[in-house]
Structures are given as C-alpha cells and as structure tokens.
Image (cartoon, rainbow, N blue to C red):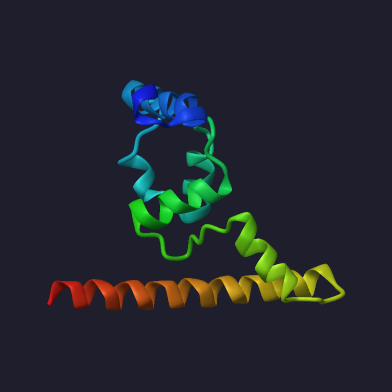
Length: 117
C-alpha cells in the first residue's frame, strides 16, 4: 500500500477492507437504509466522517439528498450569511445545500448526456 502513495489513509483503507471482508459492513444491505442511517452506518468505519460518508452515499448509492460539505464549502456558506440567529442560519444553510445539490446534479446529468452523444 505504501507504493500507492496513500500515506496516512492506509489504516482507514485497511479498516474498511477488514470490515467489508468480514461481513461486519454489508455494502449491499446498507443500500436499503434511509439516508441518515446509511450515513451513520458508514461512519462506523475508521476515518469515515460526515463528509466522506456523504460522498459515498451520493456517488456510490445515488443518494442525491446527501451533499458532502467540506470546510471550504462550509466557510463559503457561513461567510455569505451574516445572520444573527442560529436557527435562521441553519434554515438558510439547508436551502443553500438543496440548491447546491440541484445545480450539481443538473450539471452532471447534462455532462453525462453530452458525453453519451
């Protein structure tokens, strides 16, 4: 694994391999879980946090409601909302994530349809 250059991620990958090969993590079964349960289940793998779990849910399981938010997207969203109350900030963040998700999928769908031509 060292020759692949995965560095600090090696223990995370080994944990994922171990859990999948032992049956502790069943990648087929979890496809039936609701989004929130799928995210929680994926987070049982060492090194898988909210962002990575959302990436897997989005790209591997087609869960369009799962939007990976890294620190830079979070800063952009929070920086653009100088709103006094946390409740309003939370509502606005949810709306912005829905818009981001919609734009992302429209763009990707158009790109894949153009590629298929």
